[in-house]
Length: 149
Length: 154
Image (tube, rainbow over all chains, first blue to last red):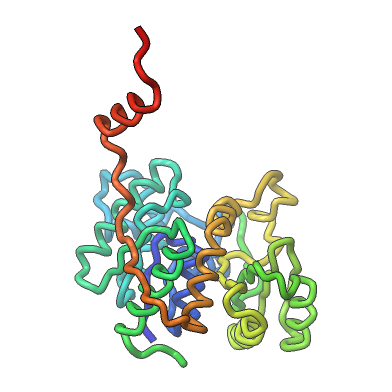
């Protein structure tokens, strides 16, 4: 079972398809769950503590805003453990503040430079494109091998 | 700062979205309790939220998806249901994350069509998927279209 990083990291469609076809999707929910279920000091709303921007220094320089480094503390470890990635290139839902926007740019850069298989797609605009979208993901995941039956 | 004691440690929470004309969230919620009585199941307008031990939740997902495989979708969630940091009962307005689901649910019928084709292939050739958005319309082409639609007065 391969670990597949999904972008947008909160995508319902990509999470479902990767899991349905027998692999493990790596998105934002896993990192958030780890923090929400870990004891410590109360830091609502996402349990992001002042430690997170320090951890984010592994992926972003110190002059990069703390918002980007904090987000990278959640998503950076997921990229490191990923065996492959699926990127949807026209994901309007990934729109956000400058922290989100710059983190997204850094994420895509890191995914492309890691040297792992990456599938680029855009969201389907018709039923024919929907068939092509699902078939492309199915083929990509099958080629990774090791799918859970 | 005050100490934080997490709840539902060791559990996973998933959203189950039901876009089916064959089955309703209410039917599925009852089935979910039958499959794993110790899991926490919350019925919502779009489907269910299920919280429990990973093996319980996986069992529920597998059996529920079998009811209508091309129209039931599952996604991980970081927070447990009703968490005051996320629940709209405390915050007002839409739950953070709702807008992403709302956007993707407008496309979900196309994904369902793709899954139906995957489950029961018609034999028709599958087109290649696009990997880049369509380029924007060039300005000269737009001007040409406008001039054809609206002849110049004068």
